[in-house]
Length: 325
Length: 263
Image (cartoon, rainbow over all chains, first blue to last red; front, side, top):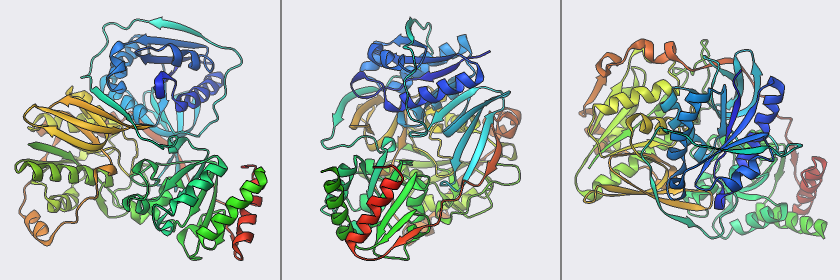
């Protein structure tokens, strides 16, 4: 009976990406229900720190050391090793996050192995014919359940579909040597540039405070940022706000931006046009503030406050601050 | 400079009318098709690079049903030079693995310095096909591009890849495959002149046999994934609308967040 593998993605400074802790938790629960072993895989120049972290979630973590991963794009290097390991050990499912690195890895590995990919899982169960994967499609208007025709494959998992929870006991870490690894052309990283003031990845945020055209300008995002800070959340935006240059593309939610599922989505001056709605409609709670009582967001918000976002925002900030005293 | 841009006709996401057909596959007749949004950003980047270089050719490559040329004309009207349309009844029901296999086979017959693709498509949103195409071809893959700077003299390209904290500056020797994002810049609207010119541009049709692929190796016959079930998501509750003073509105928000244990 094949195992379930979780491939760890690199986070900042050699740490484990947060998404990988969620994927590990989901896979561990799945393994327990399916009676299958769950194994973590860390492929990095120095896999130690990430492997130690992943072992707090999983009983067994295999590490592959590749010095090339230090100054080359991760996915091509990891895909080569992983393809060789998959051929040798034949797990029934490989889980990885649905972010940039996870998608790049899943695509490359699928080409090298012929394994299918089910994308953006929001829930996974195990059936007699392998993993059964729930996805939210068509901008959240439909839920589908899909499987692999051959019973095994690769699954990318959306952030925030589970809460990362360490296991009762810390697992063991074993080093592996993979030879000969399949090789893909390595892509050199000339420089890693950190931009000041960049927030945590918006797909991982528990609370998002987002601004749209109604915010009116870069200055208007001041209140959006202050509310995000007061709530312990991250700032998001619509494409109109990004196109206007008020806020970077990394914060854009919707079609051609990010798809998010925070516990709370506080929308300020956002009309709720379809291009934005597809990126946030599955959020836990949606609260909107808009002067236009007929804005489309009134149809799918849980709480809709008709009013000026700056006035309501200032009052809300004051009340939140008073509350936290 | 020769650039191939992968373009995917997708059901217009602005229609909110996408649906599955009776076979549980995307119903591509339900709403009119448009060029996938992220592919338009990739095409715009290609157009700007060719304009800046003062020479070059942009070829569109689409794997799509028979009516795709209607959609491809818009991308030709933006300024691409020619199109290649891979179409075959055996391709219906293709999964991501098949799609990448077919696109890679079509690319082997084309000459290029760079292949551009949108980082994902609005219908499938998988974001795995460009990486798979690159792996099939054994080419470097530079993804999540916010800026693309080729150096044709040196035979290399540099790409700013959006990262969690900023960006990684990547470099690879040509030829390469690049996955592009909206950060590449707003796509142009086709001019009237461009629309007129597009009518005369060539779109070559290629079948699976032309690519040397068997129908049994791709499409529904070789699908690696299958939809087992679909259903409507649970309906959201009714919207509570609050009118009144800003302070009242804010107070209700705080109360709501407390009720739901968010704060």
